[in-house]
Image 1 (cartoon, rainbow, N blue to C red):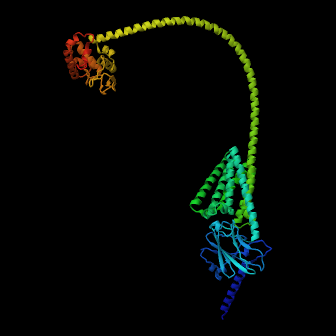
Image 2: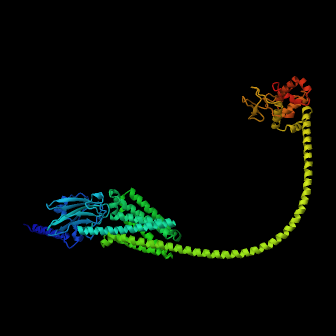
Image 3: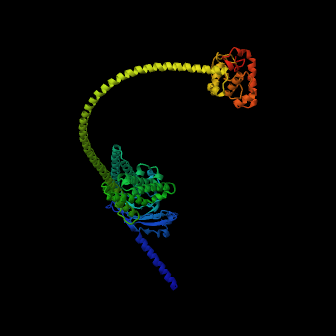
Length: 635
């Protein structure tokens, strides 16, 4: 054998020995002892293998090549640092020769999606136990909020257990070996503490609900919603909600915490705004808080619609927490005393959140204290917030009492002022009463004088009224006589157009005259002979009540179908009649400012009527030219 070959052989042997030593150091056996009730696997007691593609089978994991890749846990609490990978975990348990206890393996983290446990049997085979948050709660071997696997009893033997873990969010792979008796005692105690925790939240919520109903202040409503949101988040976080509220909804259970965290942040900021009067005391912080609320709600809907994996970024809740904490400190620095309890409560909550965050990143671990730190700080914070609400109510009551005392003092001063004013008013009233009595006597004498004068005036007014009635009667008679004389003069004498227009000044007066002339002896329908009528649509027209025939005021008169203005047509008839038809069409055109041809045509029509009715007009001088208006049918 050559020297190089010998060197290569020894180098390979050395590497194998190193790997063997590392594997031996990486995996420590945990011996079951009846004197020990539980044991938490950590560091070298639990090893892990990362499967980035998630394609390794159990047989491949058992192969020497893959088995040599298992590494000891770098922290006391192993985690799936790469969420896209599958992690294999391995522990070894040495069973005692004689034991009187039954043992189980328990996984603390209830949010792990899938856990495939490979449990060895006496025959050297493995059975598979499938547990995880994606399975229905009723499918679990133990009806408990955590995941448990029952171990068989193998006296004096050492067995290695494998677990395949896949989760969409960072999971704490805390594996605990417990005796069944201790598990029952521990579970009962834990559920008792959960009952106390949720009972306190319900008590706080119910008490503040009563206060809200009593005083109608929205700060109590926001505090109730905040408490219930915290309870909702804790139900999602510790698995109680999945066990009792939605056991058959693993899909909802996987992302319910995202809804709870959104509610906690939003209602916490709304409660901060209302409790500390941020809108008045710090307007800029008030705007900032509203912006953060809107941004938090927007981020919630983005996660819900785009990618639910983003709900895992729980550290973002530090932003609204820090803003609320800073707002409390700022308001307290401005002298608002109820903010001191708010600051104390958020100090504990901030400490719990920081401890939980450090624990999740693996930078700080106090095991049980770290796991329950946020829940404990939530309770402490609620207590201090209740003190803050009570302190605010006490301050408001103190201000109200002070205001009431001020009001009472002011009312007393007002009463004294009112009494002094009343005294002065009574004195002034007495003085004025004497003056009024004296003036009343003078006014009484004056009224008697006025009554005598009024009687005289009344007598004179009656005389004047009688004289006015007589004058009005005489005036009417004079006016009637004047109109009669004017009309008779127009009917028979020669007058100019200006004087004629005073009797027939417009179309309406002409139509009125025609209506009285046509129906002086009563109405009779030209169609059916009916004597009853209604007023028609045209001025002074009449519509038969039987056949509805409407007769205009110019129908069956010399004015029918004429285009000359009715007032000028009236005057033309008057001129032709007064001149006995001797006036020329040129003269008519000059007087009436109408075309000569029109005057000639219309005057010939009038002259024909004048000639036809010559004998009838001799004995009717009082009616004059009006007898030329109606045609034979009308007459």
